[in-house]
Length: 112
Length: 114
Figure (cartoon, each protein chain N blue to C red):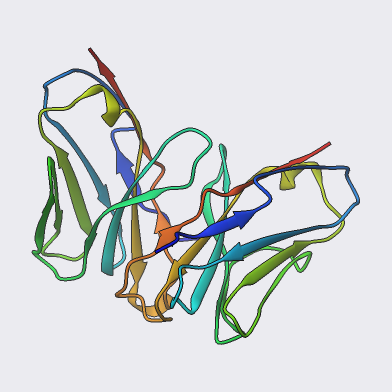
């Protein structure tokens, strides 16, 4: 089925560094959601985007809905140890109802 | 406001058995979707329910089924369990069936089939 290409697969950074990850698709999306998942837990919603070009922040997190509606990125500024986890993008294709298609995830490791 | 509640958190079943998982959405939310998460396949959509009706279904065999009750609580059932059904099953809650709303996940049910 439809997949989102999420990159990078993993990142190892030092505390205080900025992080950027992105998702691309060959299909047009009308919603992008970014989630963080800790081991053994469900994904926690970080940011929701609904309009092409939309740029939204949530604390140190900033995400954008690409103009082409086929991509989105998430930036984390001044990373801290508790940012460790797996970050997923999820998109909703216009023709698929409210079904979410997920990226493969970005495993983030922050070294103190 | 309570979040999405999934029960049980952990389950161990034997191949061939069946299992029922439960999800209570956020109060006021009427749309419930189910996802399967495995290391190999990632997060895969199972189905979505709204107003007690299945509105959307993913590419899973008929052994996977679900239902929704009038109070919006949902259950999913897997019959004739296979080893490959071992996964984290996640439930997502939305206000309504339209996609342009936020989807909130529960903690999941970890199913292990032995």
